[in-house]
Length: 167
Length: 99
Image 1 (spheres, rainbow over the protein chains, first blue to last red):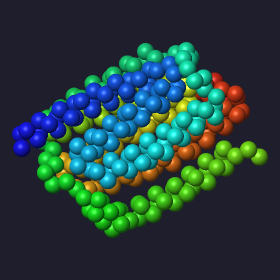
Image 2: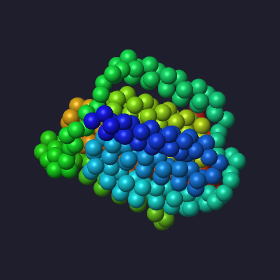
Image 3: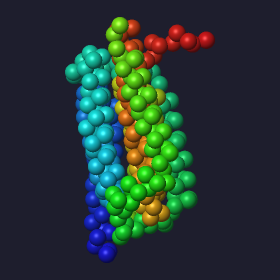
Image 4: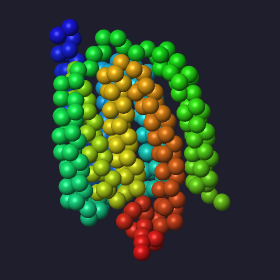
């Protein structure tokens, strides 16, 4: 049990370091395409963390929807707005220092709060949740939100087509 | 595993996303930073779900993923429209409603 916990921690920190580096690259890169590809690394890392948390269905959906669809949409967006495929110097506005101060202040606040609230809370993933349980919950307890979400997706689809078509 | 290690990782992703939203001026890059923020929230939801031995966290994460996909679709359509009207996706130039 201790050995398993150690292996999980090693995997967690290895993935977390890669994710944080890639996330910094998303917001600081001077190359739009490279930022999009770093976003792929972050999203894949999030999927790996879901697997560590024994949420395998959510991990598969994350890979399918985010890496399969959203990132492809981003690459289409980059190409349709004719971004330069290479170094570009003016991707940042003049608010870099205030933005850094704000995000660092939020981070310090969150860390202080989380340390205080969940200092020694352990996650026990000995009983992994199955896809069956997730499906049962969606189609019984959360049926109304699910139907609302499907109508919202339809509205977003129609809205995106209406906005983007040429006429 | 500690619950806090997941929450701290999500906090780092969230704050990186905030920095990106505030400091970037390319519309597509701002949307990418919003995705970082949404993924941080999803990681929190799944971690708390595992902590409470409940599938509710996963179900909410799935809803957030569905709504994020809708958001990206509409958001990129708007960015495309800005590009078509102004020949650039520079968000600092869009101040027609500024008082």
